[in-house]
Image (cartoon, rainbow, N blue to C red; front, side):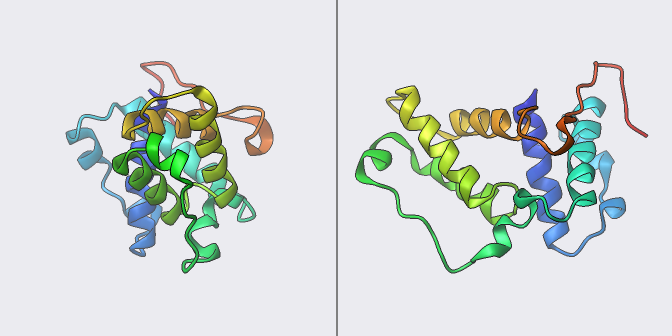
Length: 151
C-alpha cells in the first residue's frame, strides 16, 4: 500500500511544482485512476505534515542544486535498471527525496543483493524510507484502515 501512496505523492508534488495549491488538486481524478480514499488521505496527510515544517529536508531536495547530478558507479549501473534510476531521479527532482535519501536507497539496493533493481523495487525501498516511523518528523505516520479517512 505504501508504494501506491508514494505514487500519489509524486502526482501531488508534480502539481505543487506547477504552482497549484494543495486544495486545488482534483482528488476525484486520483479516485478515477484507481486509488482508494485511504491511500489518497494518507498521501495528503503525509504531505501536509511535511508542509507544516518547511525545514523538512525531503521537501527542499529538488531545489537544493538542480545542476548537480550523482553519477552511478559501474557496479550500481549493473544492478539499477534505467527505469529504476529514472524513478529515483524523479522522486528527487520533485522534492520527495533529499540527496541523502537517494544515497540511502542506492545503498540499500546494493546491500540487498539485487541482481536487478527496477522501478518496482525502487518504489518499495522509497516507500520504506518515507514511511519509516523512527525517521519521520514527530514520529507520526498515518496508518489508516480501509474505511478510515482524514478530513
